[in-house]
Length: 358
Image 1 (tube, rainbow, N blue to C red):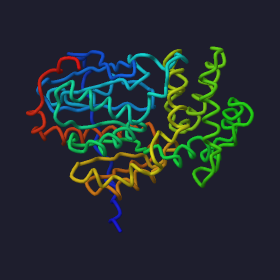
Image 2 (cartoon, one colour):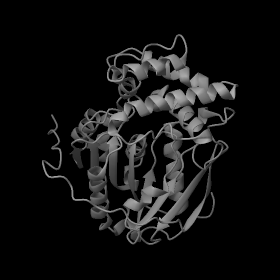
Image 3 (tube, rainbow, N blue to C red):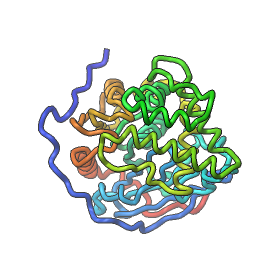
Image 4 (cartoon, rainbow, N blue to C red):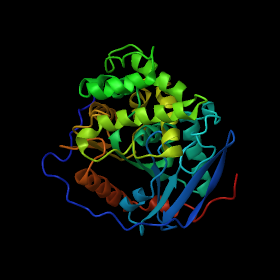
């Protein structure tokens, strides 16, 4: 049996760190990834620095320029991209005519690899959280030879058991909000399951929302997106960080919810448990996992199980933090990125600019 991981640090919190100043990209573009999709990418920092890819959450949230501030711009070549259907990538999922059948985890992994080749990068550090952690693990287990290090926050693997919890089991803490969420899905949507103990009722609820996001009436789509985001905010309400999901507006909100429902209704297009089962493929890749003890959206057990299966990973459990983290979570992430920045061998093999369009 694998040795159980030791949560780090044992007692003292990480020292406070200040994010770097805002940073504009020095290069950006649209990459044709096939299927009629073009993925927006940008690069900032040192053109000769250590390559790092920021993988955003959601799915469907789009990249955040603020994530660059965690990286030393003198040491890192920081790559951001918008996954299919969101951010500045086209076509946008907010349009119900946009075909989501060519938007799956396998497609996103292939897009990441195409972007790596396009930018002339040999190996890169991968950084992200929540859904970004799922996609990073899927990519790294497919292309481990292309990954130098991994830094993850709010670890998820998007197993059906995890989505059963988020759209079912956690309702026992927020019954009134859940009643509104379920009502928004309409009749025949199921009651949200029992938090991962079997059944497909949470999946039924998610599929009902997916159907509403494809409805021809814009008002129906907008109402469904609002109801979904209200539920997501309710789950995170104990973190006292506002309403980050409801704050999304117009196309950003519609595209986000449509992509989320699409992925979660299909188990993220992954075999159940495959990312933890195949974590042995990450052997030799240093990793840092940072997870809040009281993450209601994604309980700690997923990060714990991943750390058991990936001996090269360090697990830092942040007491008192939730899914959105806080100062201590940020400090752990920046500390890891500062440590990995000193490994410069990968930067020397990278080309200073993108390849010609493929």
